[in-house]
Length: 293
Image (tube, rainbow, N blue to C red; front, top):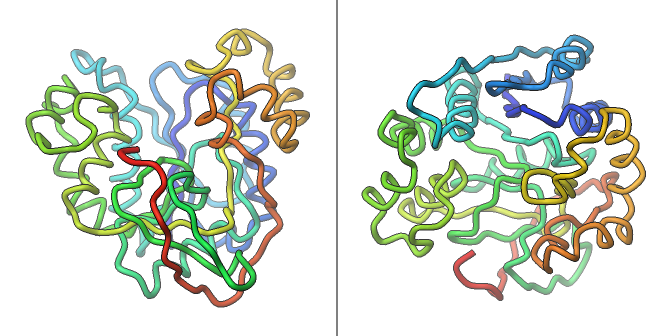
């Protein structure tokens, strides 16, 4: 059985909407779900997990003395490795504000069948332009060094052989120092050294590629949080849930609440057609339009 890993901390309202979406997804009932509850998580998650419709388990991260710089990374990396140690083949890594479509799981599984990949990502890449001569949702592109943690899927060997060796106290105590020491030639330098940045650096050294769909099977719905309108975090669970249901599936409303942060935030959060399915996949060539992201 393949495994879905989801880190959880302070957004149970997104989790509630995500559960409603996963109920509609093809092959969702064939997967096992691991919810990684970070230190200080909102207890509302437990209420939702106990009503989750498919086989699942949860991991509660204990307090981590001296590892505060890598706190978030610890929860994510621990979950990915636990998933890889227990899966038949694939580990899906999804955050609760990545809203998935009906063929999200099936697309990832299919694209891994005939391609040797670092990972696949079910959302849109904003760093490439491409042309297709038919139905876009049958196409996918592969790219180098273009990583984002927005609806991913890894074969277990990638996690265990390439990522797991870097999950250690030296990294967790000081992610920036560790990344500069172990990846001195990385094109992203000193920035972005939490788990996403670490995985991006591992990708750079691997010479493997990432697969994206030409038409996405998920989108990032996170229009608030630590870096986005933090005042919304003070609202009640019910108020936030209503905002999500009202805003996140409407492209105009998502743009209105995101564009003040800059174009990268808006492009990151364009709602897509979550009902789209695909036939036989075809790979296309793509031209990079943004460097070093």
